[in-house]
Amino acid sequence: MKVSYYPGCSLHATGKEYDQSMKAISRALGIELKEVDDWSCCGASSAHSTNFDLSIALSARNLINAEKDAMDVMVPCAACFNRFKMAEHHLKTDKDLKAKIEGVVGARYQGGIAIRNPIDIIYNEIGIDALAAKVVKPLAGLKPVSYYGCLLLRPPEVCEFENYENPFMLDKMMGTLGADVKNWSYKTDCCGGSLAISKTSIVVDMCDKLMSAAKEAGANCVVTACPLCMANLDMRPSSNLKLPVFYFTELISLAMGLDGSKETFKSHMFDPQPLLKQLQLI
Amino acid sequence: METFLEEVNKKIHGVPLQACYHCRKCTAGCPTAQHMEYNPNKVIKMIQNGQKDKVLNSSTIWLCLSCETCITRCPNQVDIARMMDVLRQMAIEEGIGAREKNILKFHQAFLAGIKRGGRINEPMMMAQYKLMSGDLFSDVTLAPGMFLKGKLSLLSPRTKDMKSVKGIFEKTKNI
Image (cartoon, rainbow over all chains, first blue to last red; front, side):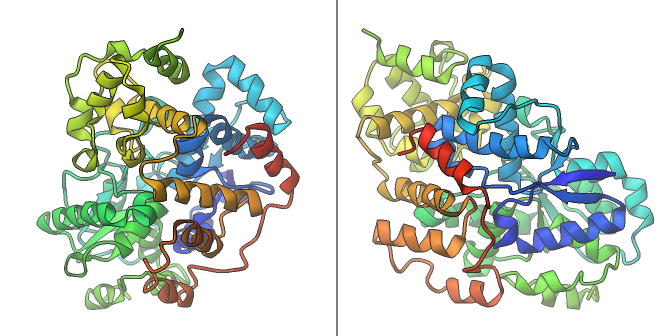
């Protein structure tokens, strides 16, 4: 299949491992990515926290650019995904707002393409069986908890993600890769998001709580699909509570034995390589 | 004259706040409620009571993370996360500013980054935030490692059509 690809700002910086592994597994799974032309920032938390019209217009500019290619748009960053789905929701349900935003952006919004996160595309389009068939190095000994966070799931009528209080797609994917997935009650809790910089102590508390719960569940690592969750969980927990954190795409790449799959582990702030070496996965 | 409740309801543009029957499910699920001056459901009560100054001057509206757990679990679909956005925007527009000053400064530095290059260049954005907040020394131990690991780059690609991005800011009268 072929899709438009919106990397967003994080995937070119702090979340570069997500971009690299996403591209690698897309090639291997037969998903052709076409980057959205001249994309700009989705506006993230800062736009909607301070100026509603700006938040919708910044996302609409990108959706309108993506519409030119007339394909579903894959949005790996959970925050960008959430902002795009939110803009789509408002533009489709409020005609006056749509007219106003089209005036601001200077182009028409058609609403004809689906905004999709890669978990949904891999699980529902590629399928678990096809993924299983590509596994050459089962992730034996890896005990992840799946961490979905907020922005892929909520609000449910906007995000349209499966089982928003107890999602399972990541869990099933990791199980397919041969990992011993641990169950826990914190799949959809918040990591503290953008307060990491301006209110760090609150975010340290939140990340410590998540890491303690992951350890209690018997996990030796955490799997995420969000660059903000990754940044916070990778950098903010107290040192005695840290666990390696992976993008789910990095683990798919590793299990599929793709070239360069080991490279992305080198740029994590909390080094996951000792764990992977101990388990003889790298 | 429009009451505070009517004003907020109009801007939320959804289920009116009168639908809240204070079951406190929002507060029970809120990850930052323990740090807030007033719990989320208390804010609704205060709006119903017309306590505009107290609400717009509170830290609560800035500590909301927009995790959307409240609206997900609200039995009456009251959009509390959207309400918090509305209250923050009102506080800015009415010149009250933010009780949690650095949180607003972070948002301003972030938006200034988009206005400058269309995309966020994290080192530039952080430098601007530090200058604006005066919080110069937090995270300085993280930065060198992040540079070495290639997570921070001073030369990230920008959006080419900056005229369209700047036009969006002008037409939405960004703060």
